[in-house]
Amino acid sequence: MSVAPSPACAAEAPAPIPGAGAPGAAQPVISVAGLRKVFDGRTVLEDVSLDVMAGETMVVMGGSGSGKSTFLRCLIGSHMPDGGAIRLFGRDIARLDEAGLNEVRKRFGILFQSGALFNSMTVAENVALPLQEHTDLAPDIIEIQVKIKLELVGLREHADKYPAQLSGGMKKRAGLARALALDPQLLFYDEPSAGLDPVTSAEIDRLIVDLSRKLGVTSVVVTHEMDSAFTIADRMAMLDKGRMLRVESRDWFDALRRTPEAEAAELIEAERLIRQFLRGDAEGPITSRRASSSFEDDLFGSAPDDPDARRPSVQATRSV
Ligand SMILES: Nc1ncnc2c1ncn2[C@@H]1O[C@H](COP(=O)(O)OP(=O)(O)O)[C@@H](O)[C@H]1O
Ligand SMILES: [Mg+2]
Image (cartoon, rainbow, N blue to C red; front, side):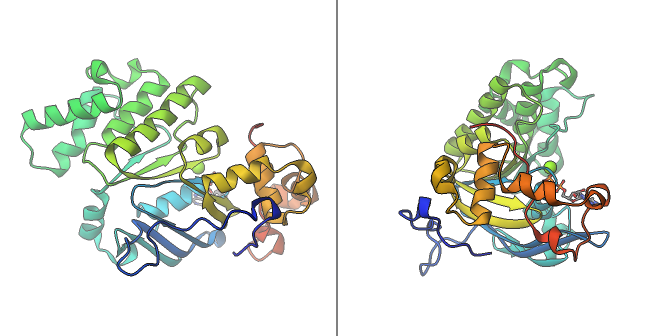
């Protein structure tokens, strides 16, 4: 979807993708074009396109149910797309067999919402697991690797604890150390601060920024928490009802968020909607749209071919 530059942001040219387009330029680490995903006849992602360049942190935002987790699962090859193409490291993942997919999987790490640790194993054993499963490294080398990863996430002193003995933030750190075990070039995070108190959540944000700087990894972070999003993002992408509304630099979104009320009326609808989401305002296009949807839609969801289903739906989350 192409949207004209808004008055508030007219001074800023659309953010160029570093290195893209020029002859011999770096290829994107992730390239998604026209992605479509359907569950039980219901279109959950429609014509979603996104390029992520080496070393950048891309935050994918959107209200609950907008398709963020589904998008992430398509990227990691756990959902197969119903249309469009996904290339990771230049390889079309739909054309890979299981062995090829496993090769690609070794190059990325995932931090799931829950941390997904094995409760019967210590933190160190959890982090060692991918190394034991996917490498031929000797046990003493694995032990060193585990220490390095735990040091990176600030958990070295807790190596021998079991997940049940850890706080929510420490579980996330442990999950992150495990995601880093195989030295991935690419990290995926699904709602990394979900369920954490604001201070712990800010610490995890800082860790994400730190890791991206220290390790130079490319990151894709899915979140609906705007504090987090603005802290960690280089660029941001806004998903709404399964459609990609906008992909821009963090500064572009920040300018939109700060657009004064008096100027907001001049913005096009999609931008007013994103502005409401970013600010967590109680009133705006999101709320009007909800108010105008029928009781049947609320009960049963909109039918896929219902024009209403194509209208954006995001939820305000917090105040600026
Ligand atoms: N495995 C699935 N089967 C059927 N519907 C699903 C499945 N996963 C997600 N959905 C639906 O897809 C939509 C988007 O879900 P999701 O990607 O989890 O959104 P988000 O992560 O943005 O909250 C929701 O309506 C959800 O109910
Ligand atoms: Mg989700």
